[in-house]
Length: 261
Image (cartoon, rainbow, N blue to C red; front, top):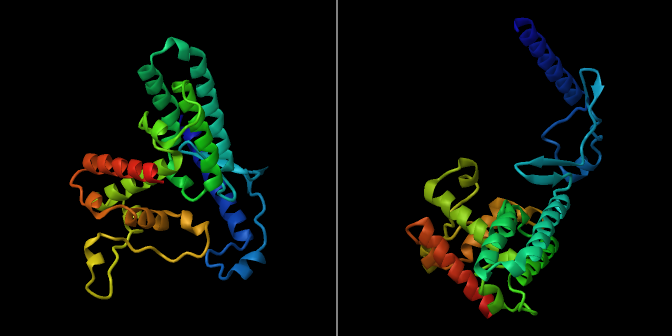
């Protein structure tokens, strides 16, 4: 056992040394400067670890989310749509034998939970949201087969918010918890309270400072999406004393927006 541990330790040290060598051989510098300098920066070759060439992967899966090189989330959305269509198709087969309430519960637990998982990272990706909204509409028609055209009132019959509103709901809830508990620190440090230069009525609206970002890609960051979403919420909802009350009034607010849209 002792020899095995020494062998494992030696292997890890060798691996760490190989990674360090590959890192320094590419002259990587985190302070790369301007965008023009980045374009001229040499591409990083696949590292060699313990004599074995390790190729780069186009995607990586972390915490159930598939990330690609350009953070388009296309692979993640495709995988999510595949799972949603599978469960929707399975539910369609047994729907005639189920009561409406049971079908709605199954749809929420099998499909809606997948739509809500880590959906805040899809803020600002309209094309993906449209595909997911189409999948949610298909589920709604399975649960309520008598519906042909899904109007706003028909969607609200199941109390299911559309995908776009669900993303807003998740970001707003996350922002509320972060401001209330000051945790986690890596998110709390991204939020700054808006301080007007003069004494204005907006100083009592509990606004957050929205950073200036010139690209749509940059606006997908939490540092932008959280303040932008938070500032769109009425002040009365922001001042809710509990998370339960906040979520209840926020959902009612979003439902009212959906009806009036």
